[in-house]
Length: 441
Image (tube, rainbow, N blue to C red; front, side, top):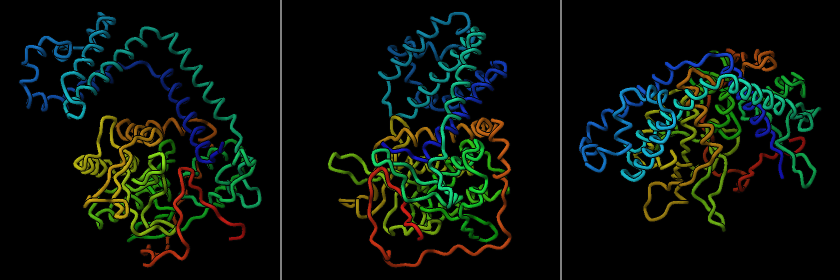
């Protein structure tokens, strides 16, 4: 068993965000216009595809099917209000129809499935509206339980009181803290840091103790991270609102630009972050390792490593949504999109390719990365909703001024790492890859 500092902070931070989302639903009246807008947008996406395949709904077997009946409804929400049980049955039958009529990889199947899911969500909204008192009580209970769970975590034992830094984690079997520390501001651990300060588990001095290796590209200031991954720069911003003009916001923008430039130079889609890659162990399970852009990374990155993770593009959509959409389209042409969305990664590393392949698809799905993608895209489409929820708690709001830090006026330029092999041999670890720092190093 292992207690991860980052994962513990992420859990607590997102529990607080979900608690605030529940309270927001309690305090905000149900707005049927949102459901009508979502359905209109879904129909708008479907229209050109249905026009391209009119023969689909003209077939006798389909024209009288539940799927066709559902698509023919002029106002599905009105039907849901008049006959909720019948409408729910129609949705189930239409879902079965869809699976039988179209391959699950067809774009029309994806959009029809999305339309049915939107209708199911609208139906649940209508049902919740009719059971307001019970729903309010349940939402309040969930919010209270999640807040209690989040605040019950004690981060103090993971904190080094002399260095004013967090250990990477705690090994339960050995009853020992890891020797490595999270010592950078541009790190996935900063959500844990802010939360621990808000709770009073660690002093504010901890924030000042985090390293800030600034750099500049043109007039833009940024921060270097340990591995140069999108995860380090943008994952905490899923539930933290880092203001425009702040060093963290600028560092995220600079990192995205550097990732795009690096990928363009290698003529591949962009988006590099820690992920599974095309190597397997004796059980044929994909292996996992940190990946990053060499110019952003403090660690020495193997020059032949090139693994593109689609979830990194989802994270970057919070900063560059149009470029992210273009990059998703580019990855889709490389068969990176499958039944459950985009796969874990595309591995362009020459050492792991065979038979003249240009890349190898890592055909697995990691729930952690899929979840981050969903939250990030929700922020893009819903005006930073998860960020608002994450910052709404009074304790977090009290320390939010730490996020307003600005970069210094004069910083050194960002240079490419020196060519040549690393001075020390690199070792590829398993899923629990940890950064180790020797005392006094």
